[in-house]
Length: 250
Ligand SMILES: NC(=O)c1ccc[n+]([C@@H]2O[C@H](COP(=O)([O-])OP(=O)(O)OC[C@H]3O[C@@H](n4cnc5c(N)ncnc54)[C@H](OP(=O)(O)O)[C@@H]3O)[C@@H](O)[C@H]2O)c1
Image 1 (spheres, helix red, strand yellow):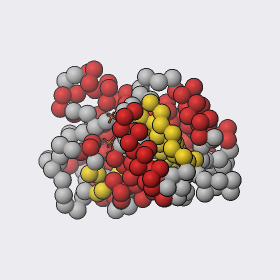
Image 2: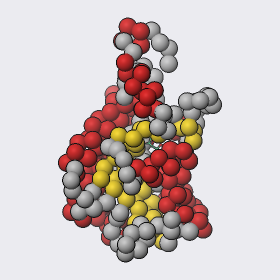
Image 3: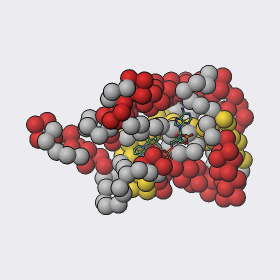
């Protein structure tokens, strides 16, 4: 709750597994939720579930983030919610790395969704929060952005750029009202990783990442790992000398 009523939360990419788990946490707090994404039918089902779980109000917005006009679309969504307290940017695509290495159009689409579009929406939300003088922006990055590896370095490069952008916005917000945080999950069991072999200690759940996202909206940052152990795993991975790293098969 805010001092004036329920939290107003805008989820950009509300169909994502991590976004859905995060929205359920906000529904438990009786938040007002705005669900934005490009699959209107699926968002309607998610909205019904969130209402049943206790959300005060749930609005859905049919938005493709790579093509929608950013400023008017964001302003219209914020207006419909009566303002925004938290914005969670969760959309993204993993893409087919092996194909994208040889297909510039495919590579461009991975970069456009995960960096080009995400960066522009992030900047627009930052400007909105700055005008309000308050509010939190939480952006989903990835541990893949911390060191390039052969399996996913195009996606990783886009997430690295996004992380730098959010860190810069957090710096800009220092000693002002709003906050900006980049949350970097490790491998998480969602639709994004549907084709992968899962299990083992490195895999996490959408619920575990959602708990970190929810906390990050209130405190901490500007860089938060989900789960927290990934900070230390990535610190070690970044320190591996390239001649050793390049011989590793992962
Ligand atoms: N899962 C992981 O292992 C993992 C690890 C690290 C970081 N992350 C990051 O965490 C975030 C959430 O991941 P997730 O696993 O929850 O993803 P997910 O379940 O695969 O969902 C991704 C969502 O993004 C939406 N989307 C993609 N491009 C869009 C566009 N142009 N316009 C509107 N919506 C678009 C997809 O919509 P459609 O369903 O319509 O395609 C989908 O709802 C992503 O940024 C991801 O990169 C995930």
